[in-house]
Structure formats: structure tokens, C-alpha cells
Image (cartoon, rainbow, N blue to C red; front, side, top):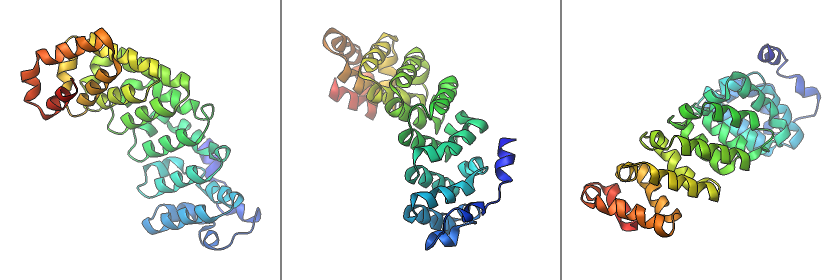
Length: 267
């Protein structure tokens, strides 16, 4: 119902609010139509870059009710990203609202939507995007293993609020074996060991060490070997020596893999 009401708003109703000129005048009233085209989306992006703050808000308002269509579009998604980059955070609330209404976790797993998701987290306050982040946390297992969703999780581990970063780190730790054995999940493990809060990095490295045989197994994988290298950097003293001992005990196996050989250089 909310989307229907938004779509029923006249697309050119903003024209009474402020006079437009230049490239803004050529796209006013046609923002959504142009955003769906390769050439048109570039015109809209240029208008957003050159317009005043007030005109930007008015141009962006033409996307109300079309956010989910834009998230799926190979062209319009760039317009949404430009809106995020150029508008004040409070003017972006309609994008967040429509993403939440349509399923934020699906947006995180969308080829183009994941980009918009990440830009919003960078630009807006933790409070403003909390519903987006909490939707990912609620569907963590699926999002973290997804070809596009894993990038969103890694981004949140670095840019979300301290509380959300901690919560995500704990989820990675609890599912360490499952994630590390997954092609995309292993990138989340590596990302967490590099981007999570410092205290969580240590907990994650210890969790990886606790899992019998896992350290050597992922040392031979494309993304997992980075997690092993980072683990060797995070652990200190006796724990680091134990990690080294386990790796060196399987040195012949590691030398059969170019990723394993890379790990051995750090061991």
C-alpha cells in the first residue's frame, strides 16, 4: 500500500517547489524513465552532481515507489548510488524504507542492490540503517554464504556500529567451520579477521585454531588461505606457535597448493 501511494504521486509535482535549470531541467519529470536507460542514467547522475541540494532532493523524489525496480536495474542502480553519495542522509530515508519494506536481506543478496546497501551504510548513521543491518543479522547464514551478500557482511564488519560489528563477529565465530568451508563464507572469515573490532579478531583467530584440521584445510583454498595468514598475525606467543606447529606438520600437503605455499611463507 505504501509503494502504491508513492507511485500515485505525480512525477512532476516537485516542479512547483523550485525552479530548475541546466541539465536538471532536461531530466526533471523524467528521472525514473531516464534512469532505466544507459545514456539516460548518466544524464540523471550528472544532474544530481551539478544541482543544488534542494533540486537534488526534488529530482530524487521521482524515484519514490521505484526503489526496488532500481535495485534490479543495471542502469538505475547507479542513479540510486549517486543519490546516496550526493543527498543529505535524511533525504535518503525513502530508499531505506522501501528496501526494508521489500526485504533488506534480499537487497543485500542482489547483484546491484548489494552496492546500494553498502553505500547507505557508509553514508547514513547507524540508527538510520539499523533495520537494514538487523535484517542481515537475522538472515546471516544465507547472506554470508551468498555470492553478493558476503560483500555486504564484510562491509558491515568494518562500517556498522560497534554493537552490530560485535554481533556479526560473534555470528562468524559460532559458524566458523561452516563458513570457512564455504567458497563465499571463507571470504567473510578472512574479512572478519581483518575488519572486525580488535578484540573480536583475537576471538575469531582462536576459534579457527580450536577447530580440528580446519586451519590446514582452508590454508589450501583461494580465500581461506588469507584467513590463515591473518590468524598467524593476530595470535601471539604460545597460540601462534601452536598454529605454526599444525601447519608445518602438514607442510608436504601445503606445498602441493600455491595457496598453501603462500601460507608457509608466513609460518
